[in-house]
Length: 137
Image (cartoon, rainbow, N blue to C red):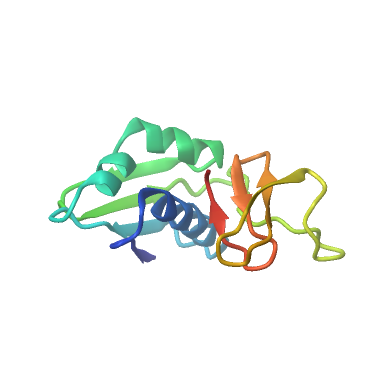
């Protein structure tokens, strides 16, 4: 799979990357090519190539077989294709009702929808129940 995170803030890029990792596992496509660029700032590139990002991904139980940093503007991750990987969906809803599960509590507000965000304890993210946008505040 391929993900272009040009013109994203660091937090937006991280949100999109974690969602793409989830989609990779769901679709059994364990390679993710992240296009971040390098000429107009290296904040995203520097972070996703750091040990901090590896730890962040490990919180979602994503492990990597390899990381390719050969291209300055592209990073390629090969996810470990193990049955031990727990598929944690960044957007979890109750399967029976489609409502947000009880282990989340409202804290902040969505700038777009102007409604309370829900804190997801397992992954330390906030989700808008209306538009589904994920953010780390």
